Image 1 (cartoon, one colour):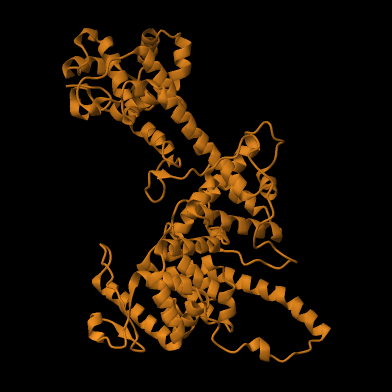
Image 2 (cartoon, helix red, strand yellow; image 1 turned 135 degrees about the vertical axis):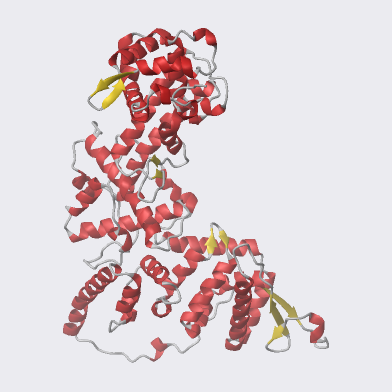
Length: 597
């Protein structure tokens, strides 16, 4: 593919040689770090502002272009989307070529496939920002990418010298009466309007015509190569270059970024941080580090408190750069495009949560390693290794669950996961996801969220231990399944119903529900007065343990060890649910813990 040059005179050939005195050269060198520091301070203040005020502040500075160029592409992209792309056009006009390229890389691809409509939309955005510069930008750096778009969107016909142009068909345009071209009709998807498809066609038509007027030779070569190229090969090469550019920012292809979720072996759960591939401070110069990730709030106090105690600039700069790269890798692995702060905040919380879990684990639960404070671990080790250590704790829990589940009693009985009732099902279901999640409501109302602390890992492990213990006891009791509807099958109802049936001497009645009239005396006998009102009596609790020991053929102390706390929680649940209910007020359809009719 031939590439056009810059299209102008070589200023370097005509530039006069200038003699700079050593004193002035030293002053310029000394002022450069200061200017970079000043730009970094400006960016930090701007990123704390609402998007509209941030735009106003940038455009109101004496040298807005220098300030915009100092922005990492991630921060500029996020700021433009938050402010609204139309409102951000003056900002995009000032952006550098690599910053423009980042917009194209983030928005034009869906996985490893080019989204033609989205790519043209990015072209329209950049053209609206600066039409003259945009055309030159394509000619200088992105002819191959433009050729890829044209190969799917433009038809070419070459007229013979004696051929009637009307025979070529309708809609063809030409600049020289030889090469005729037309833009194909865009298909309208479910989420795309006819108006948007037409505007894309019109923009592409004007873009091709403008290129033809700018450089006719380049235009004809480009069209001929576009219509004869093999699209799959051209797309693969464009995707490779796309990956190279994004990898420099920490955005690896999803299949490579997913290596971030491979745990490090314990107890060597952390590795010394390695020399960074890019952006490492040189001669004390500040690095252009994305500021958005470092400014986001994290719920992990171990990480945030350790970070707050680190006040030396180089270490904080390293951590800022590592956190930005880590968040980029997580976004790539999870296949999410970040266009607003809420989406970025979720990625940052995930990164900081597992980093904090790694710090907690290495400082408290690794007997084979020398004791270290979280702060010292943060100084010595790469954030990626700490993240992988923390994520490894959740992954180990998932693997323990899957290993036990294959031979569990409830699976052998053909019972669904819902057998373990709502809370336990939520915890187990979160762990069984491809990337394990923590069950529990958060501020957004989501029941599945990322693990944020080591305590949440411990709580999930305790739930798994309780489920395994109850599964083992139920396997020894060999209770029959409750006959009837599927929703009757959960462990609480199974256990309590058969305990009540055998206590009432109804074992011979089979596996059906208990008649309400027979159940009322048993229900009345459950309670005794306590500090919090009625509660399950100590005698009934002891009777339940004795019944379990007898049916499971385990010693009473062993049953108490395995299931004592589980049953206490169950009895407390009964108190909260039925403690204020009179036996006469019972209604079978409102009683969840016993099967009645």
